[in-house]
Length: 166
Image (cartoon, rainbow, N blue to C red):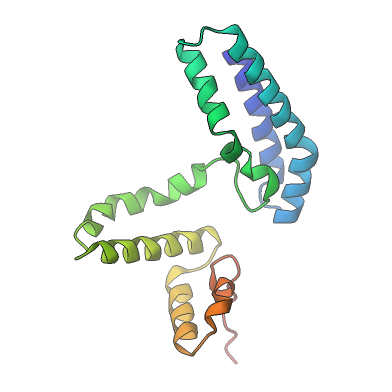
């Protein structure tokens, strides 16, 4: 049973390796045609395995965990910007976790929350191939120059364009 489950997951990762680096729309289209049928088949397979194993077994717990989190596990199918897993994010936050204890003493809960926002923006900028200091400097200067609050999404790392010096 475990071997079959791993085979199914490996096939999804094979598809992901093919779409990595492509535009979000292209990733979503490929996932719709290739990954979605595999995921739907996997859900049917998991339900069948749950019917076969003892409800108190560790394997049943694992299968129920997947079923209970199914909607979250399937988010990547509908949004090409979303990765299938959180591995890239986990690799990026390792350095942040080292300094996380420093944020415990940020002076207040609000200070810790602000630190978390800045750390998230820095790591998201890196993920989008943007130099974090230049990004934060530009965004803060733009906001101070009366940028409309209704358009703040334009300043998120995946939408941000550096100013052209001229």
